[in-house]
Image 1 (cartoon, rainbow, N blue to C red):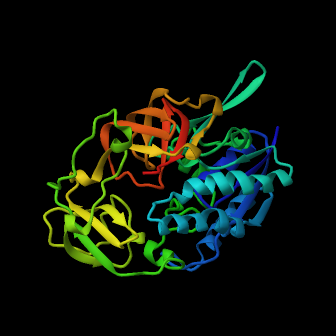
Image 2 (image 1 turned 120 degrees about the horizontal axis):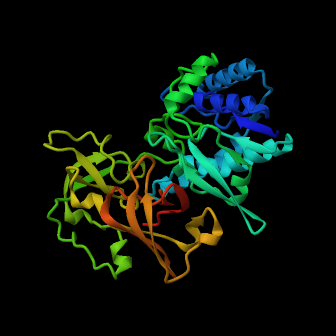
Length: 390
């Protein structure tokens, strides 16, 4: 049996993961990481991490496993939060949860666990790992979780073979109700606790207030673009660069209908937070211009400005979970792709060119935002991912 360090988060999923590993006969150690101290902009309580730690300790005591604590807040600020601020400052929409898994849980936290003599690190993620042995070489596949409503493989889309080597996902083949049932049967303190929401380790935040720690509020104008805007044409499929290019508007293309407090605080596809009413249908953000501090909106969920047929990922931002799967220049492959968590998988063709990887969807996609991650799958297997450049 192995020594396994479990990232006890204070939630039900990691609690049941620890229980299952102990039942399997492993030597289990619970390790709680505190990654964030500042409560600016948080919507739930003054110290959300404190409650998490209390619940994690209660679970460790109930399971009779050692409990350890580590403060990784400096690394978290440097690797995740500073990146997040920089992306919003540039008018992009980052995904801090993906970064948190790549940079913290399966890097800094993993190294702390290895110092404790761990053979593996376990988390409560709903995903699975498949080990393949071929010609004396071991490779690892990252698979979607069995529960289609809770699959979290997207958040782990940037993991490497080395990180997967040490990773265990004990609840990956379980359904959420089953996890809750086990927690109740074992009288774990987290059995009825709500799932965490918001930014990884920070919690639910009022994003503009949170970002104003580093990005100043600045009033600008909201301009509405009509569906009849002259620029809504679909380039031929052969013109990949044009197909992946987002629409570019100027204030002359639309009518001013309101004001906002900073284009940095908004993202493509966003509906709430504009404060402009009196419409038959909701207004959606279809573009932001942080340089001119202008937001462009369109009325209705079917507005053509919300949809695009393709996106591009720069060469340095392309990641293959198994590098042997990497595409060569000129190669084309079909995969299923998602551009946000919980989005149903979309059929698409990946085309590798010298200037980057193009993802061309069978159907136009709503709310493609630069800075987010696109992840591509072959059936249940998450094959690769990349940061959307445009």
